[in-house]
Picture 1 (cartoon, rainbow, N blue to C red):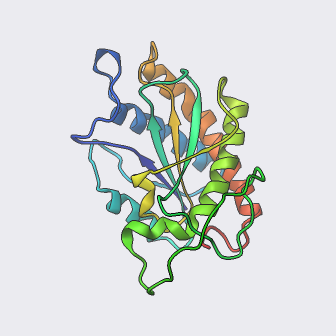
Picture 2: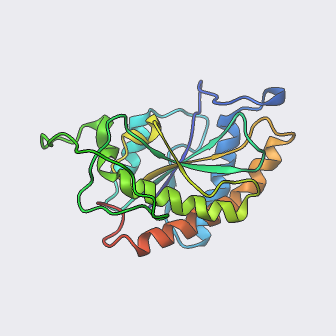
Length: 218
């Protein structure tokens, strides 16, 4: 199951472009196109919002956490950047960790990590992503490789950042951000990006599953 998360919504408009264009509207529009493309490839897809609502971070994460084998993709549109370029991000917690029996990421660039505190047996809601950081990093790398082939000006390396929207997800989770709401025609940009973005994400997930025995859960 792929859980698509169109960021923002409701009173949270996200980035704003010229003539009052808002990220929350563009990203929902784009997410619908991405969903259609992923479904065309045979994936099962749900969205965390289908209208101008603004579920909490935890409510959005709960959709992914409710499935045994899910992947969470959060979609964003930046306020700056080269128009038409795309970047994949994985969550990077402030306290590094050592995952069990985990090797390097898809590009071979292993993360430098230190031991995590001993588990108390409780999965803290705001720390749910910790056990999946390496898988998320690997998935972000695979997505970025596909994006670089489809979107001009796009880098071939994903980026780690503190992303609250991914923190509560107990599954591989990646944020994907298109640039930008400040382009001359952001509506056309979001529409044009939807199908290649969905194709890139689908191809990356297929490759990710091929090297992740047992599905997404670690």
